[in-house]
Image (cartoon, rainbow, N blue to C red; front, side, top):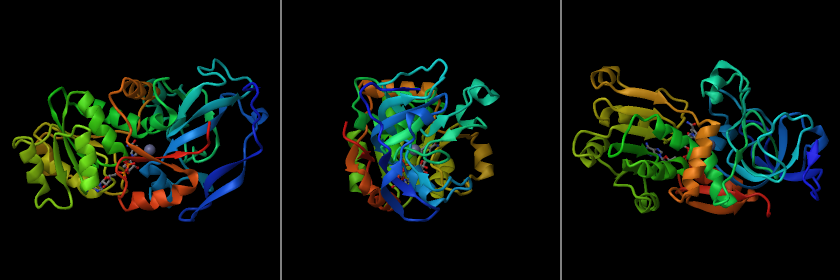
Length: 361
Ligand code: NAD
Ligand code: ZN
């Protein structure tokens, strides 16, 4: 094992823990830290400075998905920090002590199975998920995996980079599989949220025209400032399908990328999509999609699930942000604010993201 020179790893740390599904969040100041000598080959210890809060963390806390999280659980999967230790006998580590790296939802995969070989690392039977099946980034020290942590480009500060690691990479990848080309229209239900406001920016960077769909003045202002070409408020619109079609000149958008965690976001998409259009499923309510079969066939609609992104997608999403084309809009808070952040997320009150400063570095 090796430890960053001059750095002393403490025995305990502050961490936000959910003891069981539905239990209140507890910020503990005496949570144990895995010591360098206890790291397994391939593991690294990351000293976290910042982490984003994703709606997925709320799903994990509430246990409202059919695949249940582990408990007790430390959530969080948009973390940035410094590698302070690497397990002994780690072969060919692509990162070294002192590197500033990001921790994604996909914490680790075997890299040898058919899915890993085909670029579906997230579907590896041995996949480890940060803040779901292994402890995540709502703590000062996180055990992660040298093969999967993502180097952070020097142009990005840690607070600004954090949410690229889930919200950014996920929407960037979803746009890649949306079957669109320069000048096409993409509808973004959920556009004012964490994923959505980055989808607006990646879509503009790819030369697409954007219809942002969400609700309220704050989200309208945000998405318009990020370059959305049209805005539809899903709560005040009298006929959302007609409004979206009208915004595209009548035929409807070429693709819809749904980041709303709501069934209606999906049901409506099949109705307003243009013939030959693609519905990219990203938001994850535990619900049936409700896509009408007749219209799906008759309009030659393609329905495509898109689940986070690969190591390469993460590098690309960060590079685009480092080039200044995408910027996370966030409010920074402390780890002890997480409970309130969950309440605001549930109430749909957060325009953009909240990023937590976990430790000062
Ligand atoms: P968020 O709460 O920040 O944003 C969701 C937005 O959807 C909110 O602004 C809300 O007002 C809006 N919304 C709700 N109902 C709507 C409707 N009917 N039409 C239009 N907009 C609507 O959440 P987030 O962090 O962006 O995450 C969104 C979802 O994406 C969650 O379900 C999360 O688990 C999922 N997710 C999926 C992946 C993936 O790999 N596919 C990755 C990360 C997150
Ligand atoms: Zn996420």
